[in-house]
Length: 90
Image (cartoon, rainbow, N blue to C red):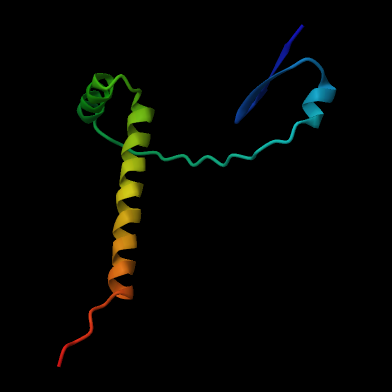
C-alpha cells in the first residue's frame, strides 16, 4: 500500500520509510504577501482572472513575473548605457 506523506512544500508518495529517507529534498522558501482591497476590486479582479481561466493567485503571480522581467530588462539597459557612454566630441 502506498502511503501519502504531507510535507508543507511537497507531497510524497512512498512505499516505505527507507525510500523516504534516501531522497534528497530541495528546500523551497515561500513568501507570503497580504494586501487589503475593497470587495468590489476583489470581485473585478476575480472576474478578470476567470476570463483567463486562472485563479487569483495564478493571475497575481503572472503579473509579478511580468513586472520582474520588465524591471530586469530596464536595469540591464541602464547598465549598458553606463558602460557604453558616448565620448564627447570636441
